[in-house]
Length: 397
Ligand code: ATP
Ligand code: MG
Image (cartoon, rainbow, N blue to C red; front, side):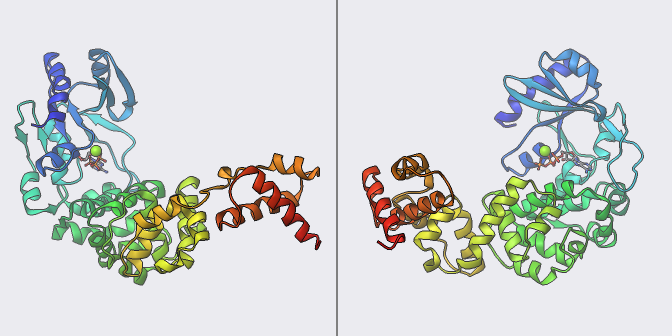
């Protein structure tokens, strides 16, 4: 057992002292067995949420209806979820009501894939009723129980399967793959926001090319927002080897290759903030195709986005990225943004004894360009002088 699990042991031990069962479950156990860095630790217990809240001093009822209580121990939070089975599934979405059960087995049975249905007790012993460990060895993603049935219960599992392909590089078992082909259309019943969460993880995975290729092979892309007509573009996307480093880069590269604009991004229900970042990258990529397209003006305009844009450019045009040297060039510019100008609007109003108006922003822009291109030093008195002269020139004197 590693340090993270050892720290979490006290939660299990406390539950057991109070007469309940408790196990580590889910992604943390899977990743631990794969010797991958583990994320949040989830615990499954026979205790009901009210019991969990009564036992631990610091808890947050994050999802009482689904049996989940967050327990905070020594500053670390753990999701403690009561053993449950899920009630009736409606409209191919996760059920509204759940039933608490007293056995671990039943809880593991409702989980999506065998590799995610493994539990570990406080001694580090593995409880694996559905062959999850073998699936990990074989690097196979397989549903717990009948794939068709499980995807009909909750079609989001289809997207989850693909995102695990991207994160782990595993293959789909043939039954799971067949069911995805047959029931991919059920994705249309799932909220776009939930699809986008899984799709973003897919875009960020080290095996994203493999997952995108599968998206095409299984025809799933046809049921994703705005992608039905983008088969060729997705094939192209699957041919790039670069793995994006963050969500802006992931979405921007995807959007660039499949030719998304603002409207399509909106239909994916991405946040306005993220859409803004993506659109800045897309605008840059329209004209920056080779390293020499990184003019002083381009460096200035896209500064903080240089790493994203440059890595996407290099991936798409089969070039080597020059992030480091471009960032250096950006840092060496006389200014990196307008706020760094040694003169501001107020200074100019006083200098010209005029009321504000369009002339002012035009003047600031001119000064900005002149400083950027080293036609004048970024020093207040010099800028005032330059501004006076510039004004005169415009008056033809
Ligand atoms: P990650 O490392 O990305 O968090 P994870 O496997 O922990 O991966 P979560 O979304 O955190 O994924 O879910 C935790 C566990 O809950 C899963 O391992 C799985 O056992 C179960 N689970 C999650 N979503 C579903 C679902 N839609 N259907 C069935 N079981 C699910
Ligand atoms: Mg998790």
